[in-house]
Length: 391
Image 1 (cartoon, rainbow, N blue to C red):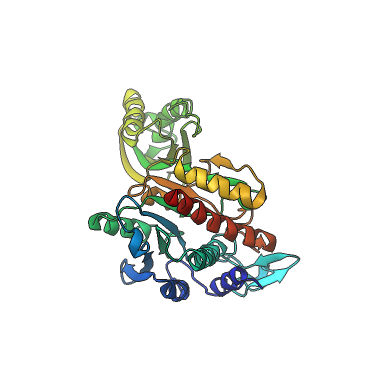
Image 2: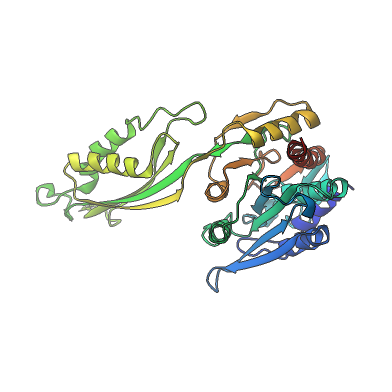
């Protein structure tokens, strides 16, 4: 059993359902401290939802600590996992790591405890070979990525911003690959803007519609118009912005009552060609044009971020090519990640992890053959960045 596989199994064995870290960060901190990392635990959130965050930093070697000569790369991720679902549908206990047919099974095996293990072992190997590196290395881990994400990475980023901490590069260990580790990385993500629209009418008897005002009927033409809008055309890195309805609630439950209001939940997944303010304004203009009596409440889940090809992307591409022979694909598809928070304090953020085919599923697993290449890719990124500083 390789050190990476062993550590991955240790982490999977902890039932770290959001927001309970279940000791995962303690295991990782115990591995980092002997390498010279300064460990800081940041606990946040209300008493009934306490979130554990880890910020660990290893300074560059003293002889290289001039501002011009050092850079900080941070490995970021989450120790929490989603609920297991029905236990009787799993072939083996989700928190007892199991190896079958060349695969490692367990909740978090793909999302994202294997990445965390690969981070740690990659850093151990790199520091052993380059103890006087000019790179500063950090770890930013949370137990609130799979939950509301209000007391996790965003809290740590705000704290680092207050301290004036400068991050140069960040790799988030989200499972980004398709068939093999490294075949796809995320160099950005779309933003997410949610809204709850309430359209008011007048409740009445369904047999006397002239005495009522049906809000569902009144909002329908506006919804049709919103569905047909081209919000933007996207760009070379992002698909066009998408607007989707997720829920519609209306009616009293009785079949003979016209409802007095209808509530519609919707979401924009938007690219860097649009802003939240512009999207809000355009949507509300449509509703006003249809003379609706409405209210909208808005929630910005995250802004889009983009890392264009440059130092970090080049280092990652070279690492993947050198380890696997794969020419990786850059992508901004998928949902949100904590990269959206880190991008506010770090100019270059990418996501790189194992294949994501079974994330959040019953019998989540990862091919064991994907684990060591992933660790080696992370180590090679460190080597590439260090070589650049030495040049």
